[in-house]
Length: 200
Image (tube, rainbow, N blue to C red):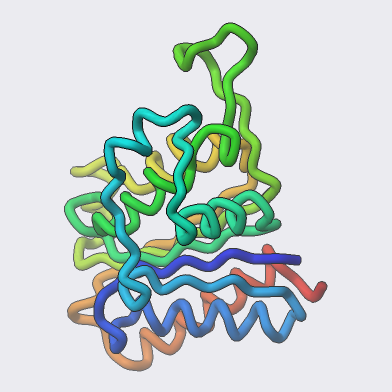
């Protein structure tokens, strides 16, 4: 399978990077084709210019954006890795979604529907995984904040675009975590990837 892996964290020594490495390692062992993007390392431009917003179907001449859209369209599975910043992904990842998850790539609307109706998901991928890190205890994240990342990725993005099999795991509390705990978390990442994307 062709799996798209997208990482959004500026620190190469972060636990997010370790998660990405563990996920990629599991995918390689299972003989999957991997498309990997470290958005910060690549200096991805998250700012959608006016000409993209006003263009028909968000058309663009930007070769990088065209490439990312084609990769998303052809991916058979998706893995996203990012920290929880203000209950949202980092701005670079939000901008990636804005510029890449566009009509005729990720979704479309029915005939005579100008965008006010129910979308039709177009993504080829059947499964999406999201791995997050946070310094907020899980109980408080759910009880106080309502777990906004779950709703964002599961309902507002992936279900909207036709992906029904979704799994997200938040690792917390990162700032006080011990090496042994992190090692077990990385093992959990590999097991999760193996479960959803087994040997090809």
